[in-house]
Amino acid sequence: MARYTGPKCRKCRRFQASLCGKANCAINRKNLPPGPRPVRRRKISDAGQQLIEKQKVRFAYGLMERQFRGVYKQASKMPGETGLNLMSLLELRLDNIIYRLGLAATRSQARQLVTHGLVSVDGNKLSVPSARLKIGQKISFTERGKRSKYFEILKEEIASRNVSGWLSVDRESLTGELISLPGAGDWESIFNPNAIVENYSR
Image (cartoon, rainbow, N blue to C red; front, top):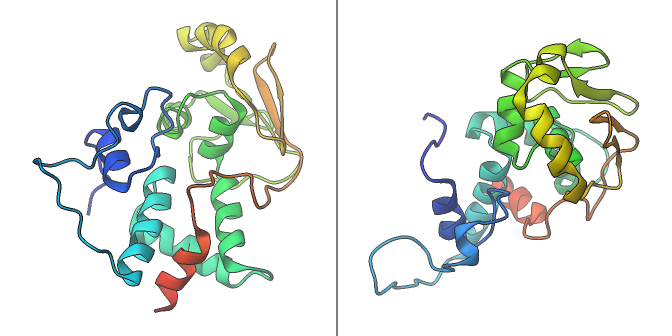
């Protein structure tokens, strides 16, 4: 199955949660699922709710099912709670860190910056959005990225963006650093990692 390329906010309305990362998400204006009216809400089983929770996280981080299952398997082999390990691994993805640093407005935009070769890690261009970073690694723009029009626009927009506490950002040079590992509460409260574990444990 190919990656979903339709309207982002349609998924947000489907799952009744803002997943796209946009400040003007459609769910803020129309908090109703897509489809004809009147909407008939059916009772959702426990298994159905667990599936929904998994799909919410998978869509928000932009992973296919096979990719997501691979991350889950890795998280299950790590010491500690599998759900927290899963979310931590997802947060350490390069595209997500760029988003958390405020260098991109959404994860989709962050992924595009990486694949277009505008981002470097420790001075070397890295074009793999799923690359997992380690503490101490620094993110910056490549020379091509610094010459782009986006770089100039970002200098003005980044001042109003919040940065996660486990990251450090220099708003003047538009560089960032991973200073610690993300923990519980460093991701959106709409996600329920325990339900994902239950879904895969069935």
